[in-house]
Amino acid sequence: MVLSALTSARRRTALFALAAASAIVAGCASQPPAPPTVSPVVSAPVQLAWQQGRTPEQASSTLAPLAGRLTATPPEQIALNRLKVPQGFKLELWAHGLPGGRAMARADNGKIYVGTRGIGRVYEISDNGGQRTVRTVIDKLTQPAGVAVRGNTLYVFAIDKVLRFDNIATNPNAAPVDMTQAFNLPPEQHHNWKYVAFGPDGKLYVPFGAPCNICLPGQEYAQIRRYNADGSGMEVIARGVRNTVGFDWHPVTKELWFTDHGRDWMGDDTPDDELNRMSKVGLNFGFPYCHAGGVPDRDIVKAKPCDGVTLPVTNMGPHAAVMGIKFYTGNMFPAEYRNAMFIARKGSWNRSKKLGFDVVAVTADADGRNAKTTPFLTGFLNADDTFNGRPAYIHQQPDGSLLVSDEQMGAVYRVSYSR
Image 1 (spheres, rainbow, N blue to C red):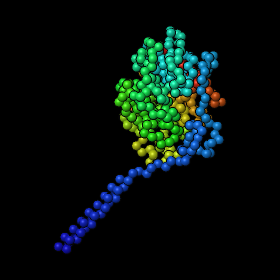
Image 2: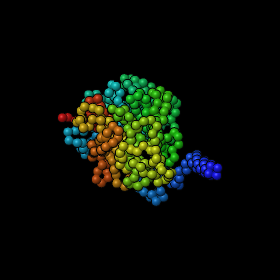
Image 3: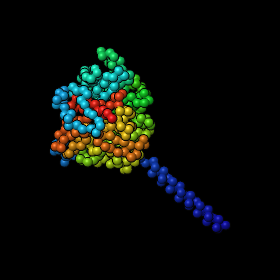
Image 4: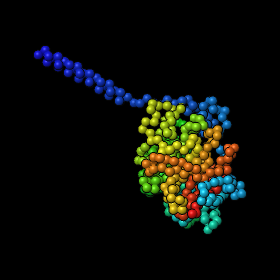
C-alpha cells in the first residue's frame, strides 16, 4: 500500500514536471522572433539615393555611379577593335545610335525593341538586309527599361506606366494602350526600373526592386511577380530579391534563373552579385538580411539571417552589376555552349578597382550544381580603369547569333561563329 502511494506520487510529480516543461516550450514557441536591429546608417539623411547606406567614414569617398552618355556615339568612336571573343567567333557592330539602350525584345517580323533607363526612350531597330535603321517609338517616359513582345505587340514598363502597342511591328503608328491601372505599380523609383519578359507559361514576369540600397523594403518591393498579359492574376513568386534586372528560363526544366545586384557600401569585395535559380514559387532570396553565398548584412541585423534563404547558384563578383542573362539554345555556336548562360556584367562603380565590364559564359547542372564561369566577350575594361563600353543585355537571334547591347555606347553588337 505504501509502495503504491509512493509510485502514484512519483507519477504525479513526473506529470506535473512534464506539464510545466510543455508550458515553457509552448510559451517560447509563441514568442515572436526578436525584431531586426537597424543601424542609424540606414536612416541617415542623404542628398542622393545612391549614397544611402554609406557610413560616416565613407562620406569622403569619391565612388559614385558612372555617368552614361545621353547622345548618340558615332561608329568611329566605338572601340570595336579592342573587344575580344574566343577563337572562331566574330564580333561586329550591328546597330548604333541608341543612347542608353538596354533590354531587347524581338517581334515575330524581326524588329528589335530596346528599352532605356535614364534617357526615357524606347527604340525600334529594323534590319533592312545588311543595314539597320533605328527610330524612337516613344520618348519622355520615366525609366522605360522594361520591354517585352508577344507576336508583334510591344509591352513597355516604365516606373509609373505600362503601355501596350498592338501590332506595332507592322503598324509603326500604333497608338499606345494605357494598362497602368491593371498592373498597380508601386511608386518608388530607386531600383524600380525593370526587366520584363513572357515566360513559358505565357505569364508576364515583372520584378520590383528594393527602393533603397539597404532597408526594410516593405511588402511591395524586393520581389518578382507574374501577371496575365492583361494585368490580372498577379502573384508574388519570389521575395528577398534586391534588384534583378535579368532573368531567363532553363531550356529543359523551365525553371526561372535570375541575376541580382548585391548591396553597396560594405566594401570593395563584399557582397557579391548573384546568379539564382528559382526551383519553386515562394522562395526567399535573403534581402535585406542575407547576401550572396551567406553574408549577413552589416546594418540590418537579425538572429540567423540566412536561415530559410535560398543561396545563389554562384556568386558573380562584388559590385559587378550583373544584368541580362540568356540560355543559349541555338545551333550556331559549338556544342559546349548548348544550354550555357551568357550573362552581361555592366561593371562596378562601388569599388576602388573596377570589375565586370564583360560578358561571361556560365555552365551549370540543371539543379544548379557545378557552376563554372568563363570569360566570353571582353576588352571593355582597360588596365587604367577606363572603359570602352558597358554591356547590358543579350538576345539570341533565330540563326543562333547573339546580340549584345552596350548601354554606354548606345550600340548593339552581333556575335557569330563559323566552323
